[in-house]
Amino acid sequence: MRSFALVIVLLLLSGPGAGSAMQLLNASYDPTRELYKAINARFEAANQGVSDERLSIRMSHGGSGKQARSVIDGLRADVVTLALAADIDKIARSAGLLPEDWQHRLPHNSTPFTSTIVFLVRTGNPKQINDWPDLIKPGVAVITPNPKTSGGARWNYLAAWAFGASGAGGEANARDFVTRLYRQVPVLDAGARGSTTTFVQRGLGDVLLTWENEAFLATREFGAGKFELVYPSVSILAEPPVALIDRNVDRKGSRALAEAYLQFLFTAPAQRLGAEHYFRPQDPQIAMEYVDRFPALEMRSIDDFGGWTAAQKMHFDEGGVFDQIYARAR
Image (cartoon, rainbow, N blue to C red; front, side, top):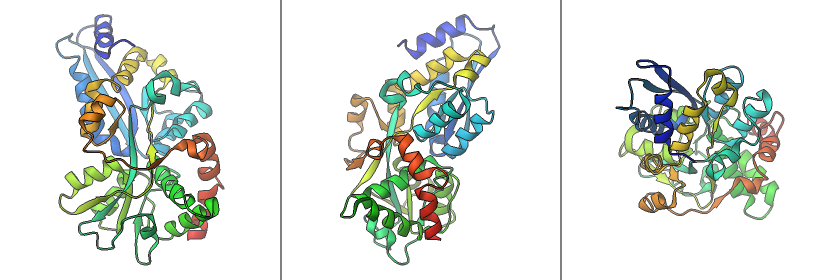
């Protein structure tokens, strides 16, 4: 794999001419706004002083499922950086915009960073929410997004299901636990950032189920001193992948630049930026630098659900378990 800097130099030397602009569009999920603002600035900086051509990375953010639908419906994204593989699979299978084996084109199944699902509570933890069973206690309001539109919400759901299935009763117990949990949910926002806004700014709910990085962001920037992060006994390894949208980059002539951009996500500078924004880096050396930031946690994997194709079909497709559960919960 060539370094991203070399690829950029070659692109700039062979580009359309001084003073022109090169643009990429990255369609991403909600909680990556701050991360990609930093990554894009670093990537664009590689262009400075190389030529007169301007490099610009534009962003589109939203719930992961909604973003996938937008790309299928015609959003001309060069790359997608979404919350889960199932959403990129849908782009491949429904629209044929990229090959179905897209995950094999980059390291770690095309996943530059990982995360997990945690609880965010108000300072002092007034409802004493310390683990999953506390979410279904009377009077506890749980904030989580809609699994139909939000990738983070699907990770939340599967983490809760994994806990429910870990005890006696297996799947039956998991179904009962998750049904009871959704009875505690007063509103389903479209995306993870919308749920953060509901909890942090609107003051609704006693606990927010969210990405680890989003919880850290809330404690540091959205409400310093107002919130606490709680790690449950069991969570899930959340793996948000990235992919090139072949048909779009070939139409736009941006393939080499888009490939360099995605490759950059796996380099040490980007891995370090990920860790600084509370995403768990894949690079083991960078991970060691931030080991105190990310506590060890028992995590289930999507493989425990048979992979995303099986999980999506069973739980989140029309008429699946979530639809059944939510109807009962209401």
